[in-house]
Amino acid sequence: MNSFIEELKWRGLFADMMPGTDEQLNKEVTTAYIGFDPTADSLHIGSLIQIKILAHFQQHGHKPIALVGGATGMIGDPSGKSAERNLLDEDTLLHYVECLKNQLSRFLNFDGNESNNAELVNNYDWMKHISFLDFAKNIGKNITVNYMMSKDSVKKRLTGEDGADGMSFTEFTYQLIQGYDFLHLYLNNDVRLQMGGSDQWGNITTGTELIRRKAKGEAFALTVPLITKADGSKFGKSESGENYWLDAKKTSPYKFYQFWLNATDDDAERFIKFYTFLSKEEIEALVEEHKTAPHERKLQKKLAEEVTVWVHDREEYEKAVKASEILFGKSTAEHLVNLDEALFLEIFNGVPQIEISKNEVLGINIVDLLTEKSGFLKSKSEAQRELKGNAISINKEKVNDCFAAKKTDLIDGKFLLLQKGKKSYFIIKAI
Image 1 (tube, rainbow, N blue to C red):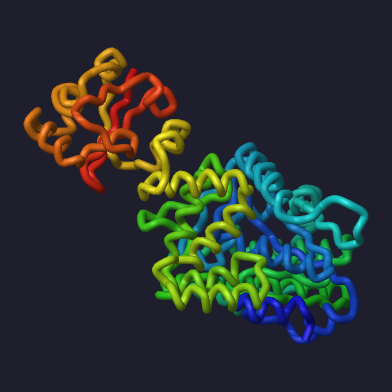
Image 2: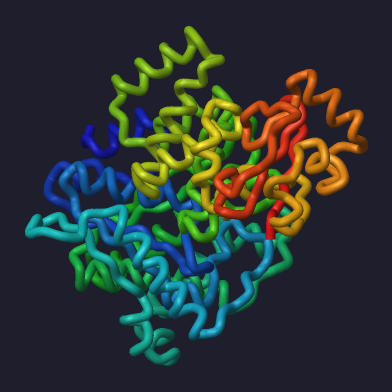
């Protein structure tokens, strides 16, 4: 078996392939592509598997192409969707295309003189020159409507499965346009293989059929499973349905790190194979080590480290670890004071906050600060009792009734973190 396919299989990242794919990969250095439609100004973690497949493909000596769908993004892929996607205006779409190009360039090796250097292409570059009549005459006549309607992505929409509400002609043409991408890359970039999620099988095989009929050639398809959590629920979104983005401006490295750190034991054992480049032996050793002391969460910590470093960098990972230590009381006031405003507020998201003049914060007796100035505690007697019981902390450090805040105590020059016991927090913003 080809080493690339073998790796996908032990990692649990293999769903299906056309006959002959294994032989093609063993025969020669093969060029393959995966498409990414620009539906936003960043990819999210749902795209990580596709990126990682291309990276593995390159590591095994083959040539990867990442296709950004400047043309197909104007239409929207109906695969796995129950309703039609809102269409984007051209300026927004072009902006999204540039953003995705910049992101994808971080994950693959585009530089150097190797024969398998990665390439980045945009299908709008060749589709913009083709008129509707030319496309219908030269491409459309090669694929029958019966063939197109036999695809699951079309059948589910037309039969109303999963609450689907039909399909427009625009979306119906998507698989033919994606098929033409494959044909164009076959003829111009020597592409012999298209890869994607298992929901893309119909679109990919439309391309191989078009190549067979139009170019009298042979091309191949390979798909990977759609990722879910171990309990079968959807992977990649928060409980509120929020995406986890690869852009640090949209999802902070801290929040990104926490997503992986909070994986269940079952998910961590699967995800560390899916989303890291650790070897089979390293992963098996980690899994066994984790089973002997699951409370230490070594598997989750290694998973979070590997993916955060890969998507962001080592420095952002280390900042995320320090931030996590602050939240769980394993850090110092010095680390807390050095946080920037955005990260501090993200760590303590949801904590009650009040704005007070700096004159009403700095140099003020702690009892007054806890009560009449901030309203954190109800009365001075409660404040004195909690201070006497060693239950009050400022910036994660215990204080007594002699404490008064100084300018150097302010986090990012403006915040104080008040705490009673282990779980009751309050933030003062000194303005």
